[in-house]
Amino acid sequence: MTRRKLTSEEIELWRKVAKQAERMHPEIPQTVHPTSLPKPKPKKTPKPRFEAFEMGQVHQAKPKPNDLKPSVTDTLRNLPVQMDTKAFGRMKRGKLKPEGKLDLHGMRVDTAHPALIRFVLTAQAQGKRLVLVVTGKGKDRDEPGPIPTPRGVLRNQVPHWLSIPPLSQAVMQVTPAHISHGGDGAYYVYLRRVR
Image (cartoon, rainbow, N blue to C red; front, side, top):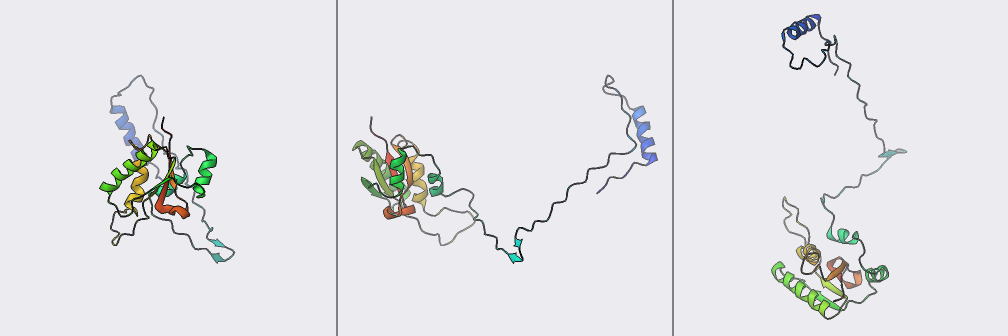
């Protein structure tokens, strides 16, 4: 859309109004109104994208998930390594044997949290370094509803509980377990030494 030019009557009317008006800042030099406004710069039209069509073939676009935040396991995998790198690699491959195991399968949140605190602090006091916490993968909801709820309440809560007091002072590293120890339904918890 282009702007129209001012007519001579409109310019004359503007000059009459400007002469009768009292200036608010007389120290600023007066400028004369231009007879026409500057032409607007044309906007660049976007080039059509033909990435989906190559050599006559139609490629199916992969649907993106509607997740607003990454999964708990992805977040844990992307955290920096706090423990010995060699031991971390062995732990992730399932080569380190956990010295203790807590199974939270089927527990409710109000009983699982105190059980986790008791287990981790007791294991640290006994000098254990690597323990396994089994949460289960969680079950799919029958009715999804309008608000997305993550699959597995304990699976999502346990890493959070391990990162806040009183457990944060005892825990050095948390990572999803190897498939031989439960996979995404369990976590390796590497504990700090008692000082």
